[in-house]
Length: 608
Ligand code: GLY
Image (tube, rainbow, N blue to C red; front, side):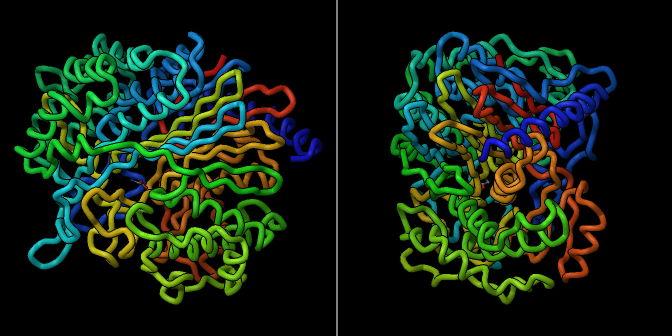
């Protein structure tokens, strides 16, 4: 970004700081649906089980708000939960680097943010160290060895609820291995030191605010409805009543599991007594895990996708996340269509961006899968010339029906809820990490002895190619279920670099809306010179090819909504999409500006 653009950028920042503080001063952050609810476009039969959510809410009058904005020069963490952000900053203050802090935050969120923080799920981490080295860690869940293509189809050949609820919905978890691999590659503190804060939080407990209390009761209620009362009991008081604000939540079984991981290293989760007990209990409860599936699980280091955009280097996640491919295509399309000539979030800009999303998601859904199982047309998909050609049939005045848009390349050429956190340290090392159980509280089933809440990530596969998953994504054969395969994801942990220096750490949860949210935040900053706060505060829209509708946040200008309808779009209003807990770095002062997205309760930015 040019010096003048950065001056404008900083001027806008100080204006926006006033706005953010005003929001904080009101003592109420914007209400949102709880984890797992916002991204769901469910088939009717699963609505009762997983989809309904309490109405948007506001923090009670007078309750302290977690900080949504933090400035610092030594280090910063922005995550979905205050205790976890504080753990990260404490690790930095002890001399740990950004990777040490990120690993500690990942474990802490498994204790304090159970709807999405996890040991029983998986995710992706993108790292850049101050010497310029980059890495992408894939710790996505894997289909168990006994999994098969049609394992979730019922007698009528339709997808059953087993793909979403209970132990059969769970892939083999990758989180512990992934955090372990990142630590082994880049960590500087002993492993035990970075796991210990989570042990303490679980063993000694943490005080609950209204965000925690509502989230715990939401999870317990869904577990009860799914028939897992023993799991639900872990999120309530011993007498079965709901926790109240100010109560201390102690999790002794989870503390013992974390202690075993702290003492035995990451493999203690996958081999030995803990793994054997988990495999046995999952199998007794109707799942298909075997001890050898856990023993075989390995996190993988992959080559990040790196590309230039408007003078910046973007470093992001490759498959089995679709995030990086889609982000590259959306930004290349923005450049090809010269979107920045139109007013930000006006009808022309939104229409054209949506048309780019429609085409990009058609490719995502039909062409991508686990690169260890299918050959992906990566070179073509990442080629700007391909993206230009793909966008060439966009009608600037009319929506293109999705039924007229297929994948842009031949398929099969052998071929909320998630959570995101961002960490930087004073050396300029940076971590962008998104991990998930899939829906909020995952499969609604907790492996009892280890107290590990399981993911329901198997639904991210094409359970029935051509049929929508819980997010409404219609996906193809490359993402069909196969033993040991990793399901396609949308998670898009991303780093932005300019002139060899870190500029931003960006990411978000939100199912398929993850990538469009990251693209929107980056476009706001890099196309329009907005501050990170302003980019995050901008209304979000999403299109994923099918269903053929724009998902638009309530905050989208009604005039823009009307203009889109006039161009032939169907609009479906949504409460906030995503939770873009991100950090930017001022290129002149090198100061950090950590921002927790106010679109959802519970985010906390901490810096020093
Ligand atoms: N489970 C959502 C995703 O990985 O995209």
